[in-house]
Length: 398
Image (cartoon, rainbow, N blue to C red; front, side, top):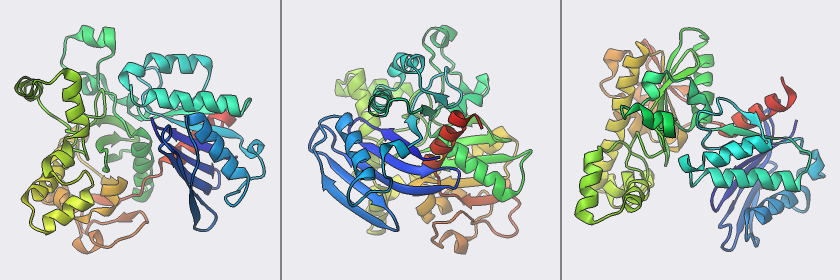
């Protein structure tokens, strides 16, 4: 089955064309600067790629440009749009209404629209992508794959906030978690690497510009670091992570900020960028630390310390750990962060092998010592495969 995978953002659109049965990617790329001037980057074949400027006033023109690129000219990989059998969409927030991937219907879109207040930056773009695909490819099944779905197995004592209960009953204020497709993929890969399907206790650290940690027991999430929105939890590229409400109130009063201005600070001006004063890109901050810039050193230490605190908490929540997994751009590539997170975790059975840790590879691998009673894995994530595979399963009922 050929599945067209879409991840629609407010001004960008990532895509892949994949057969999930054989795990083959035929093409992938991104449309950027939608609504401004429009740039399409397209990868296909054996390492072939190109970039071109295309007018994209709206997402509709962007999707039309992608479909044209897939079927005509240099980047052609299929003969016709009719070769596409289904469309899989990344959907950020499914609230409590969606605990799994679903076929897109008018009712699903209506429900997602009601959930827009929970994800005002993401859900509108996700919905727009679905509606445009329904228009451009009528009759083709569309499937919504929710970031929040994997975390719907959390027990109530883990997802509830200690606010008055009616805030949950009336407004759905609770922890939802994100990066669910990544946590699902990596935890399942870890179970296979452990060759153990039952009684598995796995911690997944998805670390990138956005970061989160999850505790996965027997394949089901029992806790995760992100909350009602993605700003809670770990320190990230520009997000503050866990900050006390009192600190937020005090900053607002001292700076004369409105709640929206304060949230803008917490989402876009904090985290690695806010502490280092240099960049939200950890690679640049690591280079700054090497050059002796103390604020960069502080940012790196804070990133690792925050991850380590969650790992320790989730070892306790799981009553032990069989595997600690690192994934995402930082998790897969930043050996120093992995080293700092794992330092001192020997008593939990997690012993890092420095040589294995510093060896670069794109493959899933074990970086713990032979004598470590628990394993430490680096597992490249593949969220697009999860979307494509879920789409296949929903459409075929298989």
